[in-house]
Image (cartoon, rainbow, N blue to C red):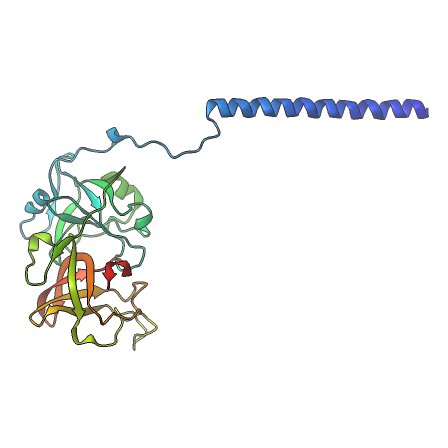
Length: 285
């Protein structure tokens, strides 16, 4: 009986080893097939340029459609513009929208989504189909969004809606900021990326870019306009949101170069030119 029992155990062990060897050979063969057939590659899909609509006009032509009141765009995809992304919401000074620019002008896309910098990257070419969107103008900046009863335009607010109108491709081109001076500014440049050289904080006071909650007397973040001068008579305002990540950072008192989006706003009841930074890399000493 002992020999019989030993024989049974030996046979079961041998069977197990044979099955294990067979399974290993099968897995190796399957792995070879995957490698040969590219089944193990998970690269992102190649872009399909044919899926991106063809632009029908420049951003300057789009701007010419605005005559003083919001314009509801209709026309079966006949109004299509394209440009490269010039802004990022990573640092919180831009909020739920992004700007694109071509060689003729710029437009703000009122997407209404968070973390747009992860989807629409700086320099990326983006095409926008304006059909069923509303064209508006705020702070001199051209906007595309949904119709609104209270504002020029409203946020699209949902990924499905945004994807119906906004198309990306894998072409990237860094937009070079336009060199400008406070003494010579043009409304046609509103919304575009500009650069001011030789600017100094007015009064050279010790201050922060804005007032985050931790520095605000009310405990609520407060936006701030700071005046910078290139000469006693020429100035520009830098607008910073109290929600920006760098709102509580100290402002340099030495001369700096400022890069950002040109817009207009109200200071003391007057309409003034403003520049809106994307992050502190837009401030060079």
